[in-house]
Length: 107
Image (cartoon, rainbow, N blue to C red):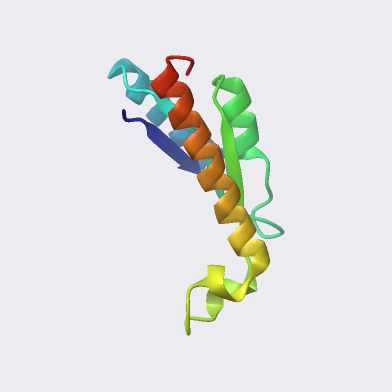
């Protein structure tokens, strides 16, 4: 069982590059498990990951916000912030669900 998780950022150029990657992955006949949006928030905006997933008929696995907690390098951000931990858990759960759908032949 295998598949790709495609990561994009909110900028238009990144979404276009991610779309090209998805098309290339599909030509290899490998499953695309879904799309994750990284660096979302006030600086770069958000929504490109969901838009791309909808456009390409894929699962939107989640979004990682750009947060101040990532600046604290004393320990991983998931240990410093419940919000960061929640984002990562959501993406992991969605990815696991997508893998189970692939395994069941329902991708």
